[in-house]
Length: 102
Image (cartoon, rainbow, N blue to C red; front, side, top):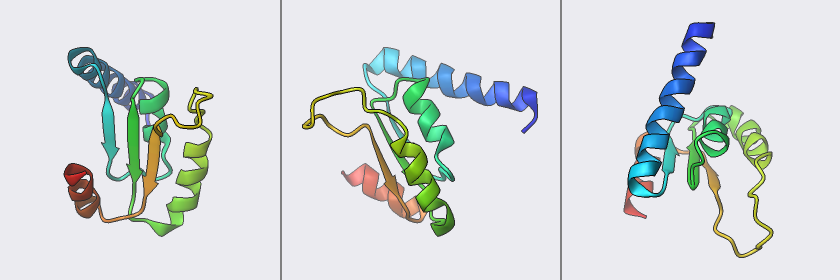
């Protein structure tokens, strides 16, 4: 990715998510086509998302996405704390409908 594009992506992710969290008090993210999970990690680490669902239909990326997401520390010693992320492997439309219903 070109340097200018990287900066634009970073500003959009941080800016829009920070605004949303300020207005609503929480940030839950559905990353429909997460690939290896890097964007989902950025929402957790940089935007302070409360929860991220990292989904992608690609079976080849599932293990890598799970590995990458596991690198994110929950930051809580409480074993009963709600999870901050989840990984799924479904068609984006189907996963969105499930997330909406739940």
